[in-house]
Image (cartoon, rainbow, N blue to C red; front, side, top):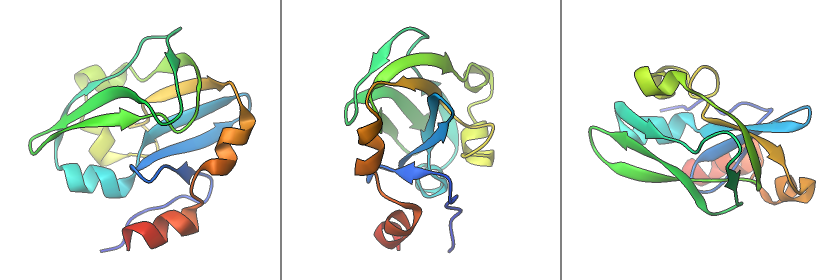
Length: 127
C-alpha cells in the first residue's frame, strides 16, 4: 500500500508531521499513522497559549483500536488548535495533511526542523 507523503512536510519517527507556514509550524499525524490507528474517535490537544517541547507528548489520539500519545516535532507556543477535531475527529482519517491538522505552533528554535526526517527518509522508514 502506498501512503501520501507531502514534499512540504518533515516527520518525526513517531509519525507526526510538521509543515512550515511562514512564522508558524502546522502539526498533525501522517497518512501512515492514521491508517495504522484505524477510525479516530477522539483527539485531545493543548490549548492556545500552551507550550510544547520537541520530542515530548502534547496530546492523545484515540481510535477504535488504540490510544496513542502525540509527540511534538518542534518546540514552541500553541497559536491554534484544530477545534474542528472535537466534533469531527474523523478528519484525521479523511485528510491527515489538510483538514485533519492538529496544532499550529510558533517556533522557538528553527534548527529543530533540521533534525526531522525528510519525506524521503520517512518513506524509507515506513516501507
